[in-house]
Image (cartoon, rainbow, N blue to C red; front, side):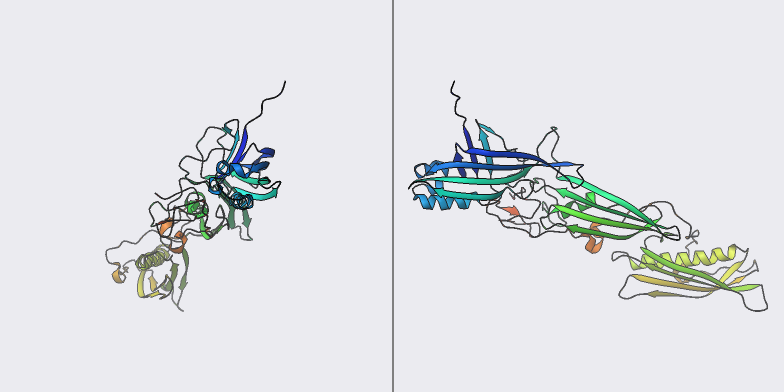
Length: 412
């Protein structure tokens, strides 16, 4: 019995290849670099189709009425453009995975589809044959679960323990997003704006500081295609945590005894605190004064003595958020000696000793107010006629083009 002819056609970027002979339709699973997370379905299709100029209106309406060589040139040009709409219809069923709801562009999940070649050969005056290959990547709903804008987030951790038994912790990882991202991510100051993988940093690569540690560094690198963010975060264990709101602290306490007497000693406290760009200088001064006064008082109480402050100084750096407080006092064994108030500290009780070891972890300051740390990293944008009227994350206006990683987010 003769088999019925199958209705197969391939459509891409406005061009229909009717009754195409599909040489291959490879469908490959794409995982993250570790092979742990399933991310995308990679499609690689090769087809051959015989076209006749008489049917140009059906194949590519814009080419209707043109001569065969002109039709060949126009079709080849359209088939080689990137990020066009793609369909592979087999007896009326499209075998290409559907784009996410809300995606009104045609970009796939990896800044494609990407045509590989289009070879056109003239057979007769009005008939020609096309050999064509195209690749595309899609997120397919295999488990009937909502699509996630982030495809994978994997990291490794290591620790280095030095000769004094202090630990340095490091986390190095990469997360990957989809380019057919209909939701987009807001950019600071732009309502409804979109961004590249840098827009997801707050959720996936901003970590709390480990207990007993200070944040030494945090590095972020966005890939040129805008779809990957590599992050590297290091925390250093310290003997004593800096008092809030300081990011860095240094200090020492000294007692010296004059000759021929044990009734009094001279004490000195030196404290240096460094804040971030957003730390209020007055808060640093107040904290340094409290810490210095508490230490001086504690040094005397440890010997059932009293301390009288002789002098004190406050130094503020002009071009760095840094303050230095020094206090000089005399420690007496006489219980009748009193501790005077220092400068503007009237009415403020001495705090408990601040140089106790804290085991509580600390959260970093709010991401959006950390000076330049709040800037969203971007990759170079590209312009594409197949993606129109996108919302520019910087200007807030719609215009042709795309910010990588958000090609599916169109402006109203």
